[in-house]
Image (cartoon, rainbow, N blue to C red):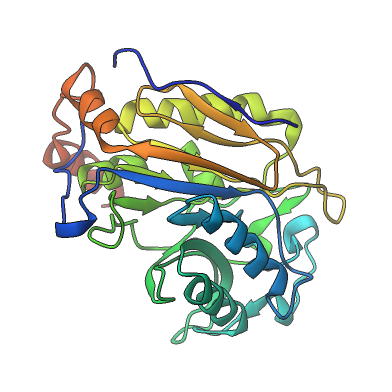
Length: 298
């Protein structure tokens, strides 16, 4: 499938303060969407080749799909110890080494056992071009249905996402797949200054239009770019597939693609414009809503 692009335009949004950091303040970020998985690549050579290709096309950061170095184990309820690893396990080291060897930022992921509790979590990982892990985010909202028996394999995260400033030319944040169906994470990230939210996923092609709608709505409500890569094909009977997608802060679809590698440039000026216009300039009043959430947990 050829990827389709459209220009960022039109009215519509506001988040937290936009970060500008020294030489990084070039006001744009080039992203590579890698719509491929690498569970059959134990040496990391195929992953490195993909990152080299992305870097040669100008990408500053590459986004992989959900748990990209794992087979899609939630296709069944059968749990294997081999699917999870300790902190800084072999999959994490492989991604870090690949990012460092190519000199590119990388959003990857793994099923990681908590070092204190041994509880398994589906964890998104952000690496800089030197291979340092900048943040880990544990998926919070887990489905449990045919092909997606996720609560059988790992438990929900218990910490909110955080915006990462200073590492790249735009401020970035992480969500994972089903998290996007609950907009709180996007709102927290945007309020913390995020300009781009990465949302790796594993979703079926027949529900793509719904996912597209949800991702567009999150982009509009948060005033951020939304970049989401999908696992590319069915696995273990789970009907996975459908486009990866890039959406601007006005909710316009910039790119839809099933190509293994596609590159797009994101601009800070688009985020700034979105946050000057309606509904981006509306205050969020986190203290007001915190009262309501607090009452629900008492």
